[in-house]
Image 1 (spheres, helix red, strand yellow):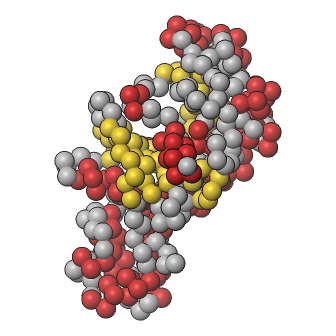
Image 2: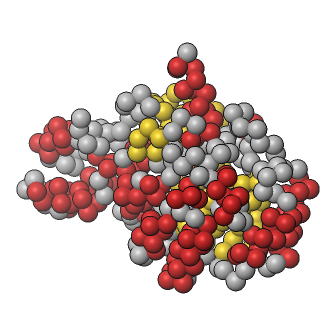
Length: 348
Ligand code: SF4
């Protein structure tokens, strides 16, 4: 199978041009066709010599994401289930906010992390996406928005999969997204979210980017976190916290803690107090996420009053906190649910 053209960063395209006896500026022209003009075939790149277009076509493929399902919410959220070339399916979500459009991308087909409240992990990990397959989610969504003159201005890497277990592809994707000659998404408008893969947090610390880091923490201590997130047995709570203290000290950047509230499990005031004690003095922010009902699990939703009480405890301890505004609630937008349903129906 031919590699995907979207797999290549601009630097790598320049290397390819050099190796193939072409001047480096051709890479810039190609990059412009891919990410500014957003054409779908080499044939359309009319300022590249015909022979070069042919050579590119012989050696590379475009990622084609087939739309299997598209669900549109009243609030403008659009959830796609895209089919890949090998019949796997992935979810991508475009959200409309008053400050612009954001996209939530997937980095793996399925996930092996096993968070107990998440549908994405139910069938385990099938495979990593290539950088190009992650890029294609943004380009495809942007091509659709081009019709109405809208732009994707922020990215969250919070779809299915653990981006830090597909580290190199995720970083190549990010390099392409932030390049000023391409889609030029502001680094501060991008957030990568991890379940706490400690070695990758140290690696990311050294990347010297302005990209935001979020951690799915979901519990205030080691024992409860291990119950909710088996990955905590591999990378224990205190090791994750130590890697984050290092990240904050080295980069001076704020970390976001994602905390999924699960009724009666981790959502009581004493959990909030314990979390506040752990986070005291750290440059951080907590994002509370009332967990969506996953039929395969027996979790119940935290009540509105309990959500606000949890937030109040954190605030009283001077911890910045927000409650995630739910988008696409009417289209059952919980991560992995659309794909899980699709897998069920194709297995029948
Ligand atoms: S929440 Fe994220 S890391 Fe955890 S199982 Fe789901 S996709 Fe994987």
